[in-house]
Amino acid sequence: MQLTFCGAASEVTGSCYLVDTGTVRFLVDCGMFQGGHDADLKNQKFPTFDPKSIDFVLVTHAHIDHSGMLPRLVACGYNGPIYTTRASLDLLKVMLSDSAHIQAKEAEWAEQHPERNHSRNATALPLYTLHDVESALALVEAVPYAAKIQPHATVACRFLDAGHILGSAIIEVWAGGKKIVFSGDLGQPGRPILRSPTPVESADIVLVESTYGNRLHKNLNDTLDEFVQVIEDTRHHKHGNIIMPAFTVGRTQEILYLLIDLTRQRRLHDLKIYVDSPMALAATEITMHHIELFNKEAQALLAWGQERRKELPDINFVQSVEESIALNDIRSGAIIISASGMCDAGRIKHHLKYNLRRPECSIVFTGFQAEGTLGRRLVDGAKLVRIFGEEIPVRASIHTVGGLSAHADQAGLLDWLGHFKQAPQQTFVVHGEAATAIQFSGLIRERMHWNVLVPSANETVRL
Image (cartoon, rainbow, N blue to C red; front, side, top):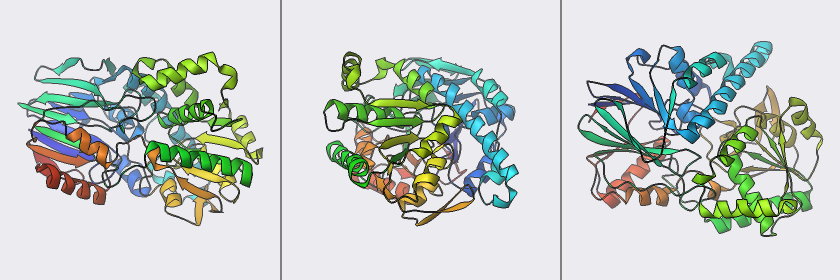
């Protein structure tokens, strides 16, 4: 049996793993590479295998770096089943459509502005169309958590709650005489809204993510203190706006949860919040349709909000382009949450264009920023950034509130691995930047004495 790392090998995006038992070939995840020109070239070259040779696909969750190439796979000839959880299927319906829409718009902009074609959009977009999205969604089958299914006569698998975003899953696979566990993206234990990742006790082969394998998150209490301080200082002392880049699925809902909870605690008041992402309302409605996946604290806050509606913050979901443009006229007091979370696409770029140059404003990052993205350049301290072909000076204050990450930190990852009752035969550290993955693999080897490897891009290993 062979395993090929088609993505997320020594990098954070593009998750895609090809398993070949000699009898059956299947994928776990089919994600888009994100972050700069190199990512576009990789997306254009995808797939590097024959899609018609794949028997089925398993998807850990709906984030685009794990699911975003499904329509391209189908457009290139794949016509088999795609398995994921019910909540992930609901999210894929809006996320993949939004991805195709953004690609079409950015390709149109690049064509209309050839003199500004220094961006990645000139070479790589669009990767697929809305028709391709519809074709891919028609192949998706929903799987309940914890139920063992058999997508092929020689393969069984089970989806377990990963606690990362709504519907996210760890996938256990029994194939070729081995049990393989794919961690997907693991959530931080004890974080807002969702339950903690499900422990797994045995496997022959483990693929574990390492996004934050080299660091610890700030504890939640300190994080919330920092969060409140930035918001209050910007609103009441500097009299500016707070701009929060956030993925539409997961992070946006968590930020709203925290802002409501901090209002309930009377630590914040009179909040004026604008969620400027056409997909965010649909994603939030889907989230509310799956409250059975919430943890007890989130269900209690939901009950409070239903009883005390007049005390809730003023939350506005911005839908039209005209409404979005009108936000540029707000000079102070606004909290604007907008996608994409890494600032490489979507309406967040417009809000950065209008607010980065204003020293009274604050840009608050609450999630990981991959190499090559606009968000990463800002976090790394860039004084000048290019947005829509224009050089924008960075005068706003930049804040990274790391304790709100949807990914488990080093301690969370080690805690999850610590539930295995004996060492797997092989462990592969994936979904992390090269230096981080190497550091984390060394830590696993040192503390747990496991056989650990960090695969390289497109490497094939025999299991």
